[in-house]
Image (cartoon, rainbow, N blue to C red; front, side):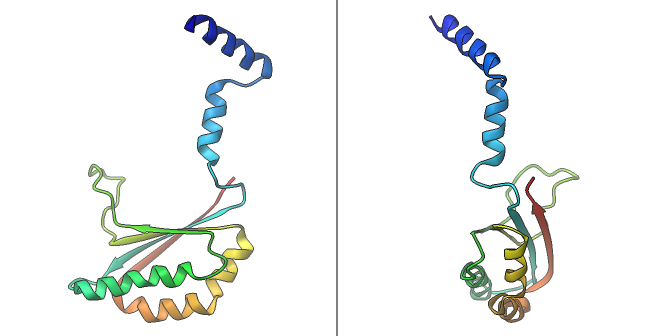
Length: 137
C-alpha cells in the first residue's frame, strides 16, 4: 500500500511539474522571510575584564534596538560551541541578528536617534564591532 501511495504521489508531482524535494527546499529556504528582506548581523567583541553587571548592562542595548519601529525581528546570542575549524570564528562575544522589511527601513534604523544614542552609550563595552548585511533573493 505504501509503495502504491509513493508511486501515486511521485507521478502526481511529475505531472504538476515539480518534485517534492524542490518544494521542501523552497519552503525551507524562504521560511517566514520574503525576497527583499534585509538580514542585519552584528558581531561584538567585548572588552576583557567586564564585570557581570557591565555585561548585563551591555545586553540592555539589544532591548533599546528592539524598540525601534523598523526592526521586524531581533535576536542575539553567543558563539555556539561547534567544532573548531579554520572557517569558523568563535572569537566574538555576542552577535545580534535583526531583520528589516527592505533597504528603506534599515536606512531609517541606521540613522534613528535611538540607534545612534544607544551605540554611543554602550560602545564603552566593546573593542570591535562588525556588521554584515544580506539582501534576500
